[in-house]
Length: 133
Image (tube, rainbow, N blue to C red):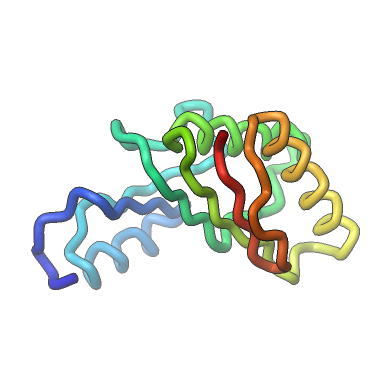
């Protein structure tokens, strides 16, 4: 996509203001915002999506938040933002703090997505694809 071209289909978020500024500069897109997927305020867009691509998004939560609560809020935000039948594609990096934390994260995410009525389509590490029912 050329810089400055009208965009009504591509949106993005990142926790770091510097990353958002660089993405806006390189793409010309104003639909890239600073946001935390685990925020109580949800994802900062007034539209719903057919596909959510969440790459490099699995982080160790702040120490004051339990792992399950952290990911539960993320799944809640994605569920609210995704159309019925929509697709969630995400990765779990191979190098979080430890293999045990990674396994725990995968187990929590799998259970939360099943509870939120998602069906697994592809479960090939490190990439996972689920469909919202």
